[in-house]
Length: 249
Image (cartoon, rainbow, N blue to C red):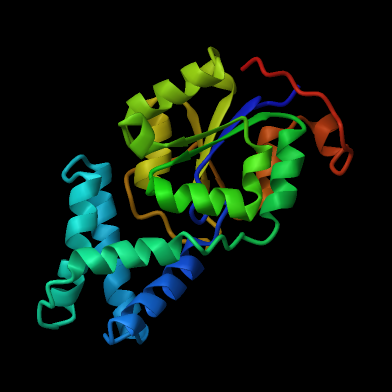
């Protein structure tokens, strides 16, 4: 039996390459609206968007308000005149984003290995339309025992309410055997901690943690994650298929 028999996973920059998807969708949308779409525009948008998502995680803004505001804020930050199309720009950006299911290299293999020893579920704050399409098209859905998107549940990471729903739906009672894995310290790691779960920061870029949020584990590869989830004898059987795992966690 694995050390962690249930692994909850974030989507963006944990399984799917959100940075690449964001960059391409943003560039395409700005090009359509004949707006600057160079490296500076991408940097400005990323900063504006990050600030808004952090505000959402802190309960300072709602997701509908985030979507309403972000391109208006982007236009102001770029010193561009208000074209009155911020809402349309957001809708088009989301539509384009939903078509990019860029996998982080090795993600599917990792899910195949982890699914041999643990119950897997996605826990995401992303927009339903965007995430459902990307999760489906990327192929990660077939390894999941559940897919939980905050919009559908009515609570977002880092709220413990979202995790309570997930654990109840999966039939999980022993939280000591559950691991939350994600790249976002505020949403994923703080969220897991709020729900009394062990957490693992998926730090693919080896960034410095300058926050006051401290995960139990930190990894920069899926192989490192195996060593946290699996017992030694399971690590020896990497690549062996049709192993049985217990759903009791």
